[in-house]
Image 1: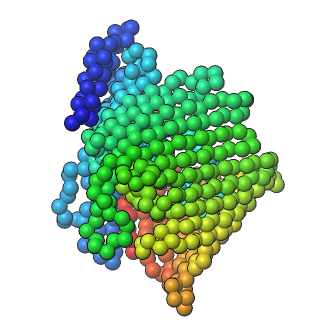
Image 2: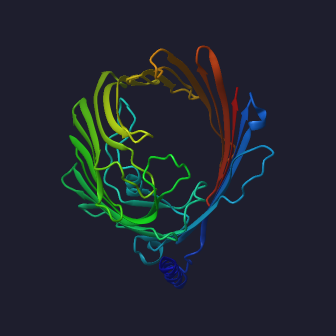
Length: 468
């Protein structure tokens, strides 16, 4: 009840300020600047069982005003033809921009909002589990990121959020504040600072903390995961980062307070060392316990990780780049039986980029499986691209192997202007899977029309997928 009163108070105060203010030229804060609308639909046809064919649809509209944005979205999830539709998946939200009224770079958001950034990190504190030969550069420290809802936000609680983003200064490149609370009693706050230290070096720091309702209840009597009813638990996330020409890194520490027990923790680090045409990425993760539950009520089943990813880049010819990469990945994780198992993966890859396109060839292997993957794309008018992969998976008894070949291709029609403000695009793709002969394939066709003007933008798209 207290959270609902607080949310209503913030909205009432903000609306009072907005309605009372106007610009110097008499323009009202709620003068409509642009309307954006999108409608999309999809059909999934199964040749083997036509009665199981499904369709889906979604629509969204956003009204952008001088000091406020309002957005609503609605969708019909995937449903079989002839079955009853669910029309309840509706989401909505609004954003007030105080910068357009009184010059303060702050926003107030309300509705079924999306939260990411450090919230996503607390929900998944470990590093990426993929064994990619060309890893991503570590990102800077981040706080809570909030945005208006999308078509899949209908199940989210109603929330109110306040964010402040300072205009970059000479040495303070970023200073963000964020606070949110929802009607389920959850709340969190974050501070994020990015400092310039020299011509090409920046330091970043963020702190996030809050309280969430967490539970783990199931009807499966044989579940070996610890069960507990809905409980209020405190969480905290601390991130530090550095970005320089030779060293880029991000370190994270997450803390979880599980009620009466001692708090749990996890730490992760992502690092990149680069010197000329050579570089190496090395990352790691460790958790203090097998009973860490995140704000999303998920049990962290990964206990430790190590990843090493060296990369070499050469330019043998003009406008021609070749990258050689390797990867070693090791993890310890919980199985469904609550046992700890160790998995190791390794691989190597070659990525070539030239004037006419790019190609990539990678090999990855684990204890009971290995795979070869190749991808090619061309800088042509129709943007053709295709890939082929070959995977072998060993069976548990060690007496048989499962071999699988996947082939995929796609092409796009270049955007064509239909008049001064309309454009049309289309894309066709197909894939096939072979397991001791042809198993199944999928063909997909998508098309879209977009029409825009100074005051409005409309887009329509359709996706058709056929499985044979």
